[in-house]
Image (cartoon, rainbow, N blue to C red):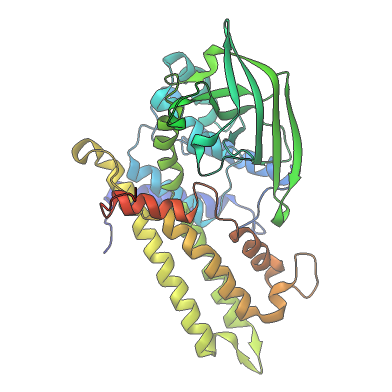
Length: 392
């Protein structure tokens, strides 16, 4: 199976590819989470330049900072950006909060927030996970109680991926109604991050990534910051999560990392022979290449399905989310095995191969909870893709 592209689409792909080849510094390394203010500043500069070209949110109308392009063109830009592993400091605004605003926000909210997202001028955090609520969003306990023209928030979020700079807004889901089933009582909000009553407690994670606990104590937020309909936040969030999962940049990034590792195996000798001459190494790398291609096709299938939703209806199922989670950990574990004991050395060690990047990525790959667990995605595929009934 393969997906063909029009002449104009291929022209766009070449333009994006040439831009990164010419603009990125020669020492730019892929797969690096921005854990320093210096790196974040560099990536925000890249994001700002791409925002001026309309490439951050190319599918949005021009009045909101986009190019009014289709899903295929949007994902061509994502794929080329992903190959160079361009980390968007405002990835949550681009992939989640922005689409939610575009689909469910008022016209006033769109005019206020979308242009800043499209230009890379704001930083958003996704605040969904709680101590007792992860994939099961219906168990959220952060409470928002209406009081005059405001909602008063009390509760906690945790394991919220952050950066070494202050966020501007929190894309948050909160409980606004006690009802069964519980997911019918949730509402989406855009909360200014500096709202009095909100405090942040850092939780350092593996790979030097930063996460935070976020506490809400009588934090008052004007009602104008609610997105969409009251008590319909769960359904709005599920719609926008599809945008987060349909990311053609993921297999492109993995392909780039595989290409670099193959080159390393060609240049590195063990027992007097290049690693690439070892049949085990060749078979392992070939298996990884096949898995990446399967993921790429799955995500382009999702992108094509999005582009045809007016004719075919809502997305029926998505294979990319599950395949993406199932490939990453085995890929880096296989690379670790090829490196042997060298693979366990961290960045900073003079003996570390590939600057310790494989060990760092292996650590991150052990966490598969973002965007829903593997088990939850299998349940969704069983129902939507295979039509299997739920066990009562």
